Length: 301
Image 1 (spheres, rainbow, N blue to C red):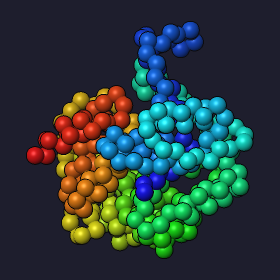
Image 2: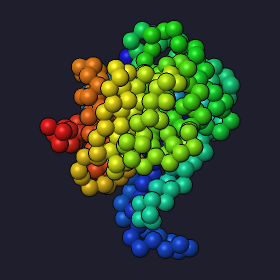
Image 3: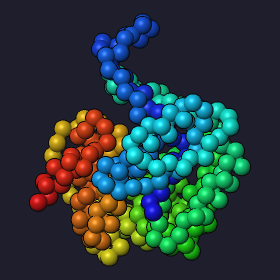
């Protein structure tokens, strides 16, 4: 089974306003309400590609119930832990004002709720895949990803981690199957600026030496780099297309890579699927469909 963990999921309220004016009453032209959160994005893209997963994490209040309803309507299985207080956050995104966003803080997660999640994860075993993606909510230990992987390290679980800086570095000793920093996040770890694919390679190898089995580095319009477990290094420029919405492109890349890997255990194919899926989402209003991914993947052929 495939599981995704989103510790602080959201409902993303996306609006378009023509001629937005600060300090005045503005009317929306378009509105959209979507499930949000990095792990949830992974579950949605996997579903679009044809793979089922179970979305885990925490929800609260009426917004949490609405989040679960929308995911269920998409055909995604959920097993969230329901909190007694607070509400799942709403992230407000104003498309008409240079990507202006106001993100909610989310509910407080008690030690008892964390313990319930850890108990839930005890059901994972050999061959299961666990995606750990996104930031840690305020008030929760920054070691939560490391604690989860430490608890499951001898279970034969494949860990996929999409996190930044210390969150990523702390888990490397537990040999995650895949990590996916972007070039800026990778540079922050080592105190350098990485702008080209060639510059990324030695630092991706350093992350591999620190414990990661495969290191996939996303670089927006510059493309991506993969330092694979078999010793191969793959790099490619970004596929051609019009950027529409970069939100979720990195999550889509992770989902696409793992989907490609499961197809035939070939790292080149997995790398291309990751790059195609991330790009297809960036070229779309929302997360990529299978047809959109296949169209982009044909550029490699």
